Every structure is written in structure tokens, then in C-alpha cells.
Image (cartoon, rainbow, N blue to C red; front, side):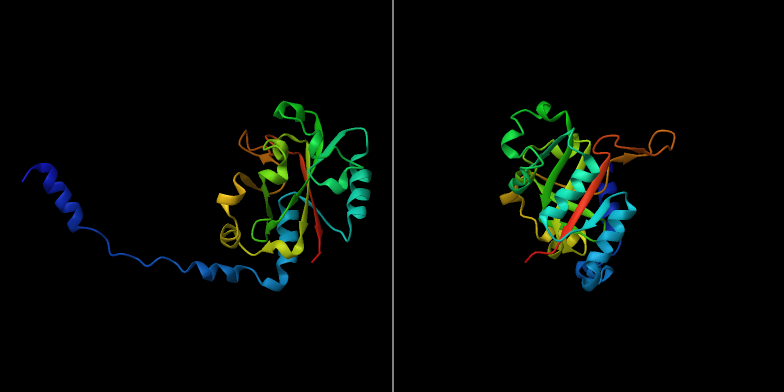
Length: 199
């Protein structure tokens, strides 16, 4: 028997006992279904997002106009916001054409109470770079689409049909350099979440 075979034989003979994997379903107890909206709002606010509960697109438009004004470039992939933003047909073909975007307004069909993240698909982005190149990001979320955990979120995402997508949570920030918190280091400087309830 060669040294190699002796070593491999010793390794095989000294394997630890197998441990059962944890029950993934037990993670759902981290969030009470009745309080998903409250939990999502709390977590999103704690990580730096501004959360607005709205009843209509008119409210969204009013808040955006009061907060951002009209002098900067605002874009959106939501056709109903064409009176306050350049909509999908104005996004251009090249990412560089979005370099001057002050505010991007997008829609998400999935939000996660556990970490305050929203899932945005490529179709909702218009251009993959949009949620990351904009100075400020606003996302509309239907409260019925809030799930408890990332496990729930992944079980409802279909990569084969949706293709590219990203979970986005709060404004971009880093504290890597000298432990100083920098907001907007590699993405939007602010994130606004507009929560509505529409069946």
C-alpha cells in the first residue's frame, strides 16, 4: 500500500458522524405573517431607506415632486409616471446615457421583511445599470408582495423566466475605509420605498 493510499484510507476511517440538515421551514417563525408590513418598514428604515405608505400614484407624484423638484433628470419604467419622469422609451440603448439620472422610479413585485430588500427584475429596471447608477432610487411595492424571509423570496423567484434581477436594500453604503461610513459609495445615495395596498 502506497503512502497516498494509507492517507486516504485513514481519512475515510476518521469521518465525523453525519448531522441532519436544519429544517428550512422553521425559519418562517422569524416573522409573524400579520406583522410583515411593520417588520419590513422597521428594517428598511433602520438600514437608511425612507418609507412612505401611499394610497395612490398621485400621492407618489406629490412626494417625489416635493422631495426632488423638477430641475434634475428623473426616469421611470412605470408608464403612469410619464408626466413627472422620462419613461422606458427615453432610457436610451447605452448605460452611459443614464449617467446624469438624479432619480430612478421602479416597481418591485417582491419585498422581504427579514432584511428590507426588494427584488427588481431586468424588465423592471429597463437597463441593468439603472438602479445602481442613479443618484437616488425610489421603488413602488405592493404590500401583498412582502414575504417573511429570503428563503420565501427565493422560492418565489423564477430565474428561467425572469433572467437577471437584483435584491436592493437601502442606499449604497460602505465603512471599509478607516471605518468611516460613506453613503452612496457605489450606488444610490438614498432609497425611497412607496408602499401601497392594491388587490
